[in-house]
Length: 442
Ligand code: SAH
Ligand code: SF4
Ligand code: F3S
Image (tube, rainbow, N blue to C red; front, side):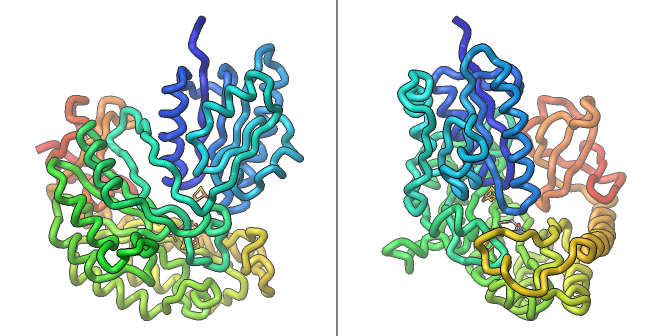
């Protein structure tokens, strides 16, 4: 009998990418073979995101699509919903999508094999398992595939309750993974050959605060501990919250320039203190700019990236211009810019002075234009320089070229051999476009 096939479709952030790798491992260990073809598979899992209406809408569409496929099949096809929509809607998903068999929260995925067996044996029609959202999920191995990147979750959940954000409602309260487990996992992935280790948390800076010995354990200590692991690799992390980024983290980054990548993602959300207050971000424009100054002092060559929301309720043209200014001043290497999206149940959803879609769109457009200029300028600053590149493999656009990234997270394309995959090479930059650098292997 041929092997059963399973498919995972991943939406959303790196947290979901990480959990997909875990689900993949679980399914493979239970005899499933993975496929991307949703038309020829025995089980499909949508690992979902609900951070903005657009993300949630895509999942709605995909569920409709799967219904048609499921109905046309002769044999049973399991449909599962995991991730943040599962956590948000729980059993209500079944009301509008009764063809869904399983709704399962992130902290319960280790129970998937048993649940699937139950469904296939006809012992249960549907299984909804979204409890334990404030507990630390069991430690599960993950399969990150053929690439060079592996991620390790250091803390789950969020206690910050930014007024626009659904994440604290769907991911539960903050809970940190024991340092020993994290270090062991990082060591394991490096031993397996992964070269880029991404540490994940909604607010990595609050790592360890929920521990009894929280005065001894913190994010800086964790970083330092990880840096003791031998080998050639880069550590990255997302996301630090500006209100909690402490100097000791910058000190560790400065102490291990070969191990901690020279990029920092520091979500600003807005350049207006009034908006930051309404968003419950707990820092002012000045606090943020002072922090940037500190960072640049400690880590002169660091590249900065950020997240920005435009059109938050009450945002005036003046507030928006302050954000434009911030983007211009800080000169981010990259910025993820979003129109504010109403998430039901969050405080901002019912705030007065919601901004029209039209204004949101135009503000986003104006912001993107400024940021594109920054990105281009930043790229051009690499011209003629020789940079260290971690090689990822053949370029998607041109198979004969290799692609990789610098420590600052700039994409570099160059002529080279596939055998270079997973190695660090020196490349001289000869051409620079807004998003991509082109170079020659040295
Ligand atoms: N915990 C991470 C962010 C998680 S969500 C952090 O604080 O950095 C990723 C980004 O989505 C946020 O930084 C924010 O810019 C954006 N976002 C979250 N909720 C949103 C909403 N309701 N509308 C638009 N953008 C939103
Ligand atoms: Fe959302 Fe704010 Fe928590 Fe980030 S820190 S997940 S934006 S509530
Ligand atoms: Fe989306 Fe959940 Fe991540 S809502 S952004 S997948 S934490």
